[in-house]
Image (tube, rainbow, N blue to C red; front, side, top):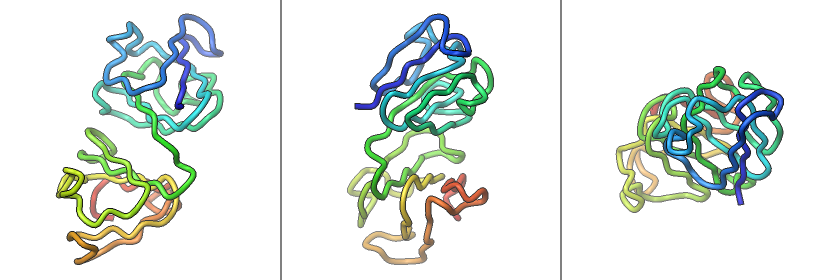
Length: 165
């Protein structure tokens, strides 16, 4: 099970908050824009600077992050976060909005039609966390396609901020 511990101050000090599930707004926990360090005890987590999974995004795996810089965010800017399931095998995330914002789906295997998962013509940005994926414009593996990988994208980190790689 994914688990993260947030701390109010750098160096894992101050008030703390343990989480094991998605939080759309840390305001509900009295921790909005307060986390300055964290320990991820299990899983991979997506951290956002704005509520409802918007704003700047940082992807963190199991480990200790002693300040905001190590967490990949500006100081005291964390407002929402969500865990990912297993990313040891092929894993890709599709986001409804550009720059990895908004509603998302995570796939671990091929999907012949995004209609089946209520995400047809919705993807605007993509993160490949593991593996290489062939992405088609049409259902049933038809139409134009792109090969995307966890080492591809503008910065060779698997991030594709817009739906047309």
